[in-house]
Length: 410
Image (cartoon, rainbow, N blue to C red; front, top):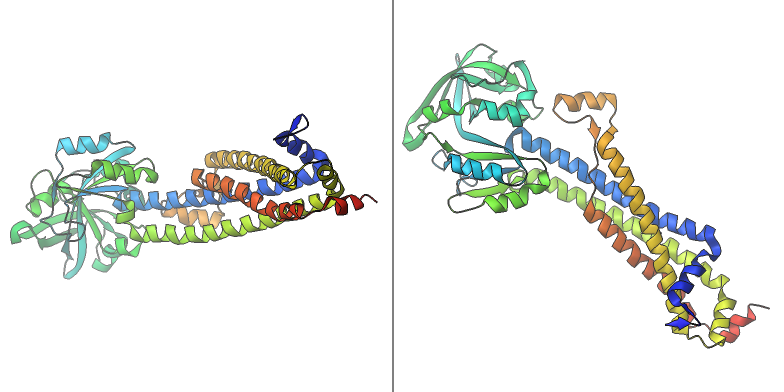
């Protein structure tokens, strides 16, 4: 569609700059909204990723390979053969940085006359030290070094037992096929994670000692724990490794509390998103209403010269499209630049908070992670919102009479 030799798109772009100040202010408002949404969602995604990654590296892992029945019934007999072929397949999966073999059972640990129920976990010390954050939570002694008859337990558990580094503990449990599992170990280290459920109930021993005490085969594990470079890869890795005779669970199945926290906070973020979009939409409505009022005589003259009301309204909608596109480009550029810089340097937390976070193996800085879905949604919502906003002044133009509009010249 043309007006003379100028297309409506060109005419709309030219008209947009007849009032540069208003154009830049409105585009800046749209850009600020896009920047705010992208930055806020990126900060949230970054905090979620740190939270999930820390929880996964501490104990559960990002993905676990298990016997199909183990998740619902964590019994000793539900073990999985973690042969070299399976471990090689797991490590070869995209994003996997470590595969940690673990065996676990509930048992009774005793020191002298004191006994407490615990979760006994057999681990491979060299693999755990390389990928898990639990060894870094040591508050006394050291982590397991691979030698037999060693125990590494929570500081709260040790306090309740009256045990210290160097003391001997006796571990009893129900072995495979109904036998009695019995083992003795020397406490070599204590840990404190800040999570009471772990600090008062977890005891680790070398996995070979666990297999010998609980009568498990040499390659038996209850979970092959996979550590990934990013938590976001967990779902596709789990889907790729799931197969007959085993179940592959990602962190959302292993950490339901973390999944619920992410979902709850995401709802709050979406409400914030809607509020910002509404505010920007109303500001754009005001801008184009002022445009129509100021250009009423001009619009009346165009219609008097033969331009249809629909073409005039369409030209206004195209102006809104150009304005929205300019705004979202500004916002995306600013958001991407901000996130790119802060993802490298981070946002430092207050000194008192940083000390506590470091103690529990959390970073002392916040690092945003660019949220592509947030950027896409922000662009779409803003462009649609601008078109919705221009619908009111466009409707006014369709009801405008050329004679009445031209009288505004007098």
